[in-house]
Length: 131
Image (cartoon, rainbow, N blue to C red; front, side, top):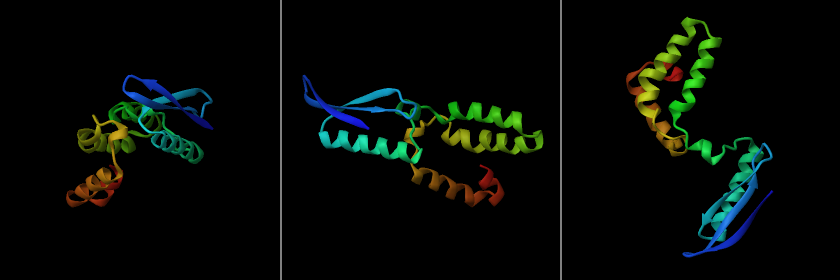
């Protein structure tokens, strides 16, 4: 559960949403101009927690490259060199140049779909799937 509360600023009334993360710690987000916006944000948080897709807002501002480094290291440790090499190559040649500097929160489904369509024009199906 969460709550919405108003507070006053020099620019007028604003709203704060308080909620608990899946780990039980409490946090809040403030600065909503309307109560409706705050309530919709709280509803989206509750739905994402229920679906198991919750990502803390601070984590969503992380660039793709920051997440890729530990992911690639884990793959390197668990795969044979012959299986790891195509994954690392796909990251280095196709994923990192396009998505490496972009924050997770700035990536839209339509952007990824357009990128995959672009990849399909010049690459084989197995390379696109791996990428």
